[in-house]
Image (cartoon, rainbow, N blue to C red; front, top):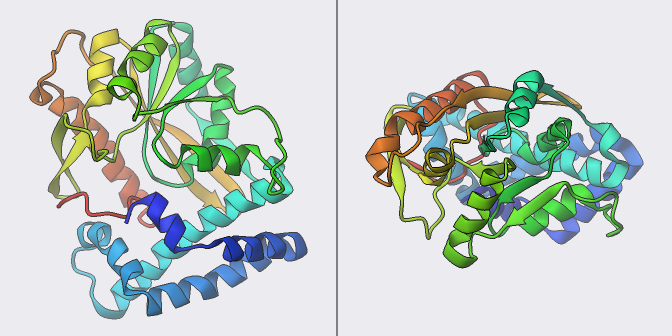
Length: 301
């Protein structure tokens, strides 16, 4: 189960409406109270929800069993649920209900001003959709390579729940189902010194070029495209992570900046060291934020 599937399984139209109503009547605390009960029911009575948590938990907490594992599954689902509720709060009550801070702002501005282009290497951690609002500090459009959930992301964060537009989206979506997977569009953005955002922790089904690295003790496959683009254009890779650090506070962090040498070609082995550096950064994130990793599928199989 990936994150998009998780949202479908852990919610329905009437369920979302119930949470929106509760948010308006009782605010975040009321919505969270219902969330704890709903998540308990999902974990206790939906085996597929527990199974979707296990690939990650098996590697992050390999010795946990029984009630300890059940409690970890519950905490992971609650963390994911809070992210969804927080997005609903923004959609219903406005963006001022959530504080988003940015660590590494000056570093980002310095890279932007070099006009070499910039690749934001994102992951399915924290609430990256909300935390991306911190990228407004760049004062530049962000071109996002996004799959089927792109339209959902834009509706959730740039429209009110009645469908009225709050403000223009600063994002420009590049469709990977387009010609050559959007490769020409991505190259054009970077060659013009623009900003491109790519997810680094999930290989799309149609992605043939993969690089293999070690993550949480076992080999996984990661998409190679970000590293190849960096090598082809000279644009640095900026590894960004987000986390929920308080009830109404999210933090976006510049976790690393990876410079990939130009002209490395197309062989995956040439990019292993750089992809491993990203995987190690993501692993450190999981050590510090064990229940905010939301890649709900078996990366190791």
